[in-house]
Length: 581
Image 1: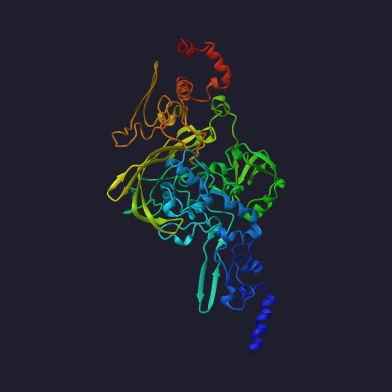
Image 2 (image 1 turned 90 degrees about the vertical axis):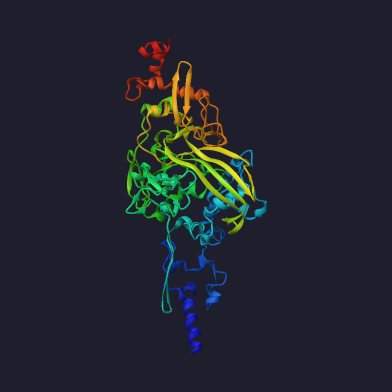
């Protein structure tokens, strides 16, 4: 009997690729491209695939090979280039977030790239700066290689590659001695819910895209005796107009954001916009190239299973990344939704005056087509030096405790400014920090830092904002809410918000980026970004005189705007005779 058992096991070992399947025969594959019968278990999880005992077979086995420290060994067998790119990505290092925070906490004079998460992991807590401690306890929960097991009262995130690619969890059922394992399902058709695990704070683009605006915590509306519209246990939201790409096409984040832009291009970037490789024009005024030029396209199409391999595909203007789901279809441009392959026709960028006039050449598409933006004014950061709080990097409670208190959060028509790309973009607070430190009975206020940031709020609408909303709206100009007027002596402005009366340590309104004379009150963390200067403010407002009568683009003056301007300067129009006295 003994020799029969040995012979039986040897026969099984010779017939099977590895002994794992002798015990785990009722285990499902994670997808069609990682078939368990072909790949087995050990190729991904390690262990001893020739062992005859459970203990020996499981020796040095890795439960989650997708964690980045394991991925370079296991996933890297087939995906080495991708794993190397992800290792350097901002989603892994979070360096841009940390470095901007240190700048806004006035610890550095300029945004300087650091090692991010990896650097702080090796740095003793006692030697961390105030910004580094803040980052470790309030920001560092979100990075793709976070340990998923530490999340108890929050949505789990992290785990490496599976943070994005896992679409269904594992299930283990036991009946007597029989164990059935349903392996976690992986896919390149990443649902937006995976993105929203992290992208729901900061500039809140993950929420805004789906038409959700985080409320101040009132829990309204109140339906059937219960609080509704919950984001989580303590956060609530209002329903607002969603981005047209979601409301009309149901597009997910991955339908626009390419794998290069998200997973990295192999370089260490300081800011998210540096890593980003897509723009509106890539779909609405695309450059097409043969898909055969890009071997990766056939693989991505096959992995997805819903996207046909077509002859002509769009490539991004910034990095030349192939967009395998954006194709040329006769004279049309179409996009295939990655979730299910549904095809949509993309509207082309029109050649109407509002797009081709020289006066608008500096406008980013988001400046006119963003419906609203989430603005978080005033963030009171309270630090208890003698307290303790969980450190998301060290994975234990360390000395120092933070409490985050907001002044007021609101949604509004976006203010505009010069963005990181030197173009006019939407802008909002990001962040306005007032600090208070408690140490025993002693209270100090080491710094206050009021900053703005420019970004696309992901609330795109087909209908653009009107001319008056840009040219005679004080909020749009960056002056804040108030009463704007103009007369022969120039522009006058009376703000609604009085910071001094509210007890704030600033002399300007909290919602003001600039004064009417173009003096900038609040800072930017990007070298190119700034508010409008005096000349720009006057030029924008001055155009309102013409917009009063010529506020629609079907007006005859826009048919040949250069000719119309020439007639105006030569006093050949009725209004010129009056205005140019």
